[in-house]
Every structure is written in structure tokens, then in C-alpha cells.
Length: 383
Image (cartoon, rainbow, N blue to C red):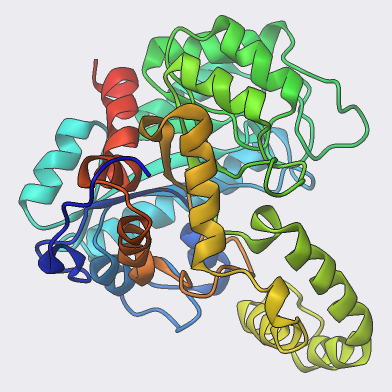
């Protein structure tokens, strides 16, 4: 589709020296670390982004979300939770210093790669932890945070979310615009995944840097509120930004969502039994995995989400924006349903192989897998 295939068999080596380097814009593994005690090296099998899976999948750069449930905690309570997650990250990075390190610039990322280590980037998911204070934003930058998703699934006082139905027309107020300007000044990446259309266009109107949609998909292929319209994709490309394609099945396929809703209705008794088994804790990853397998067993084959479904979103975004504006943003460890063939970070080389099969050239494949995002990071963070 985007040029001649020039790949060799060795370039498909999974995780080997000839694997395509991967940069993933979004993982929630720190949430699993703080809530479930997951260690980056010695992790349970359900954990999706770990040192072994990253190594196997050829991951060189991984963005880690510092996520706070802004529907439950705000202000300094949200800040406290985020500081605890950053503290936990620093402990993990110290214990596993032979494998990973914090990257605050692309130059630092390159240095980590030269040492055979994986570069980990820190990112705020949602602006609640800055507690409506630009001084807090600057503090996060000093702690190594290099990007922030402006909202999560609910509106803030200063920015509207795509999933908050109370006021879907909310955009950036004056303080929200100051947040974007200060992020530009600091060299922090403005992330417009999760935001309302009004917030999206307000952001593009004032930013002086390219922005990123770290973990979103294409609304033309799946009509989910979290996805981006073709007009938004074009505007993002004009801005010089990148979309990281999300691996959550609900953002990839309307048919999957409909089939899952039907399967849930048919499985009410079995789901209740699972809840009882896990003490009613529906956030328990083992419960989530058992529920996923139960529902998957009841979804017809034609409604299943596969690697090809994920590749379709990459290709649609590339068609609308140009391949140089597309990247990867898995949402691993924050999602309970994902494509068959892209179950965790160990599978990333399958994406490169799938694009080759579809006729992509190596330059565009490397762009999607890592270089497009690194270009934006160099522009925003390093310059």
C-alpha cells in the first residue's frame, strides 16, 4: 500500500537484533504494580507489559501512564496518588536498573538503548493530579513526567472529556489554555486522547508544538466516543502530530461491542458466580481475565477482534493522515479485551509482519513502530 516490500526474513525475528524497534505510547502497568503488586520482571501471566514481554516484542521505548481515577479523587488527593505511583516506578527502575531506565529526552533514550536497556517514559493520564495549579505541572516535569493526557473519562473544571455526557460541548477554559501553553514552554507533550472534540480543537488552536493522541482509534471504523473522526485525524496531521492506535477491542470493532453486550446478557449467572469467587472485586485482574475468557467463548467468530482488525485502524489512519502520523498506543494493562494475535507486548513484531504482508515498505513500518513518535518527542521535548 505504501511502497514496495523490502523486508528480509531476519527482520521478522521476534525480539532479536533485527526486530523492528517498538515505541508504545501507553501502558497501565504502574496501576497493576500499585494495586496488585506486579513486579516488572517477575510478573503474573496476565500482565501485558513486563521486562520479558517487552524484550520479546522488541520494545525499546515504553510510555507508562500515571493514572488516577479522576471520577473518584481530585485535587491534592489525586496528586498524592500520582506521587505514590511515581515513587513506586522509581523503586522498580532502581531494582531493575540493568534492564530499564527513565528517559526524559530522546538523547537519554538513545543512551539507554546503547546500554541494552529499555527506555521508560512517564506520563500523566488526565490532568486531575495537577490540582488546578501550574506550579504542580512544573513539579511533575521536574520529576520526569514528559507528557499529559489533558483529561480522562470525566470533565475537569478546565477541560472537557469525550466520555462525560453531562457537558459534551465543554472545551478548554482560560486555565486550560494556560496549561497547554505551559506544557509547550516546558517541553511536555500535550496528549489529546480522551478529550472532547471542543477540547481537541481548542488545543490545536493554541499549541505551538505537535500534539499526540497516545491511545485512540478511528471513528470511521468503530463509532466509539473515544475514537477520532477523519476530520480530527486530518487536523492532527496538519499539526504535525501522531495518533497511537489503541488495542482495546471496544475501540476497534462495533460488532465486537454488540456481540459482547449480548454475551453478557446470556452470561449473567456465570458472571455473578465469578464475582463471588473473587470476593466481588471486579478490578481483580484474575477476575477480569476469567470474565474475558467466558465472554470470548460466547462471541461468534465473525465478531471477534484479531490482529487484522488492529491493522485496519493503522491503515485507515495512514490513508487519511499519511503513514508518518501513525504510531502505537496499546493501552496494555488497562484493557480487558484485545485482538487475538496482539495479546501483550511480546506480540508487537506481528504488527510489523502484518504490515509487510499488506505491502508496506520498511521506512513506513519503522515509522509506525517507533520513529514517528520519536520525531515528535525530539521536536517537543529535546529542542
